[in-house]
Image (cartoon, rainbow, N blue to C red; front, side, top):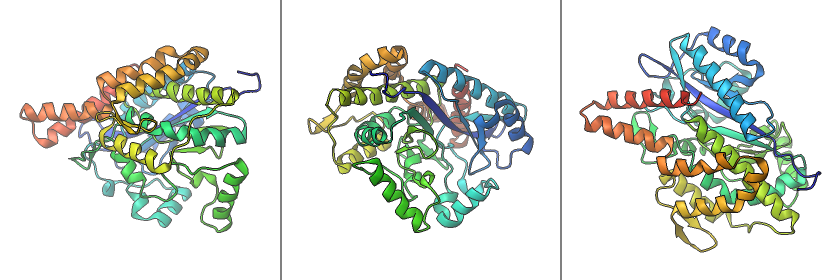
Length: 378
C-alpha cells in the first residue's frame, strides 16, 4: 500500500430492539429516562430510531478491528445495563419473533414524521434492525470504483449475518425477512453503477432539485458512499446477535475492500457482473442464508457456500495479515459451522415445540436466547 492509499478506518452502527424481560414483548413506550441515561453515558454514540422500541449505537472512528470491537463491547454493555434498570433488555436481532409493527409507537422527531407521511405503511412497518459498517476511503472517485466492484460480495456478507427468520409470530421461511420489509421503500437494494463520482452526484442532484429527497442520506442502497463521512457504507447485513459475528463481518468486508484496492493498484480489478445475477444471489441469501449455496458467477453454477467462503478468505488473507485481523476474519468459518442467529432462533423454536411447549412459549424462549446471545462476550 502506498502512503496515499486509504486508511481503512472502521465505524460500526448497530440497531437493537428493546424487550420487556417479563413478557418478552417489545416495549411500546419506554420511559424517557432510559434514553436520557443512555445519552449521559454514551453521548452522541447512541440515538433513538424510527420506533420507540428501537435504539441505535455507533462506534467512534476506529483505527482497526480490535478498536471497533472494544467500543462495540462498551456500548452494548451500557445499553444492557441501562435497559436492565428499567426491567428491559436489548436484543440484537433484525426482527422480533412475535411483536407486531402495528402496535408500536413512533419516535416524535420531524424527520421520522416526514418519512412516514411520505412512505405511509411502507415506513410504519419498519420494525427491523440492521448493522452498517463504514470503511474510511477518503477519495471520492475511489469510493465509486470500489462500490461498483464490492457489490459482488454483498450477498455473501448477508448470508453470514441473517437474524430475522420470524415476523409477527410466524416462521417466514426466510433467513432474512428484514430485507423484504426494507425493499418496500424506494432507493433500496443493490447500488447503481456509476463511471465517476461526478455522475453519482448528478443523479443525486436530479432527485434533490426535483424536491424528492433532501440529501443523499435518503439513498438507502445496500452499499453507498456515506453522505456524512468519507466512507463507503455497507448496509445489507442483518444486525448480528453475537458480538463476535459483528466483528468478524466488519473485518471481512474491510479486507475485501483492501483486496480490491490492492488489485486496482496493480492495474487489475474484480469483474463486474450484471445486477440481475447479483440480485439472484441476494435473494438466495435472503431465503437460505448459506444453506443452499450461492452462484459462482464465474463458473455459472451454484456452489456450496463453504467453498465460496474459503475462496474469499484465501483472496483476502494477505490483507487480513496487513490489517492485523486474521483471527477475526477466520471466525467467519465459525459462523458457517455454528449457524447464524437465524439458524439458532429456528433451532431453539423447534426444540421447544418438540418438547411440548406452546407456540407462544416457544417464541418467548427464542427471545430469551436472543437476550443471552446479545450479551455474550460483552
